Length: 327
Ligand code: SF4
Image 1: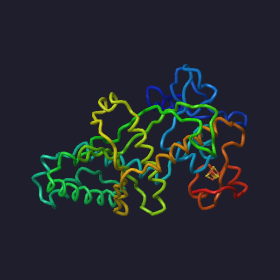
Image 2 (image 1 turned 90 degrees about the horizontal axis):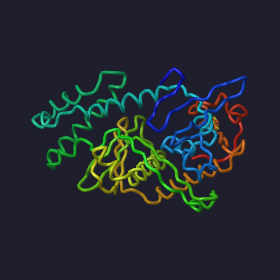
Image 3 (image 1 turned 90 degrees about the vertical axis):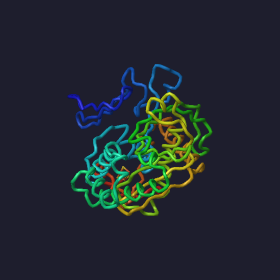
Image 4 (image 1 turned 120 degrees about the horizontal axis):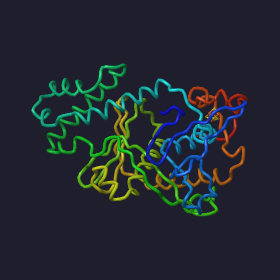
């Protein structure tokens, strides 16, 4: 972060926070030269000098969770307090990334199970999350023994380890019948994929989650994997090469919740990717119809009070209104 409170995200995007002035919240605006932004105006669609809409897995997930929260977080750019689950997520993701960067396969190949446990444990830090990382160690030892038996140790380390991808896609006017658009739009997708494994001649994106697995997570995590799949399927061959990844098809996706020893690898679902396109169209529709109450609050006590850091400024939470459905 620089002295102006700006966070440099990539060469084409700078995160700027809004600020309060005389009791009014001042949103940041897109800057000249920016290629993509959340501070987007659909009227710029015909002007190649203007930025296009940026969409990340988190921004789309936030919009889906609550349109109003999207407004607070991505349009107003109000800072969020870092919660303990957020800190845990960042720390454990870094530890797992570092594990794959440092593990020496040749060295591990000569070890028995107990030596592997000690060796893999030594590659994770001793921090507040040792209970969780020990489960990850046991999981990785199991994977390693299996891969050795199957003679596939070359695929033990992911071909992609926390890799950021960028791509542009087109959303057509009739993508979502409930939220028709006035024209086609090019939007920019960006995401950091936790892990990408090679399996035969295919790639499998895999998401790590540090909370416990619940069956109610299923549609949300599938949406996240659909986002990554759409991203990977649209990046250029040149970007694959630059990131050192083989340009192979994606037939499966997966998720790993070490807290509950839950791992799922399943065939990618076309219906989830179609639903993802519809969500993107709905988001663009909200920008197109940029009215003051366009980004609607969907208040539910058990959703908003423990999980939304804007509940102290959200009129719906303050008035304890109940409107709309959430899922
Ligand atoms: S408190 Fe609830 S309704 Fe208000 S912004 Fe947060 S999630 Fe949305």
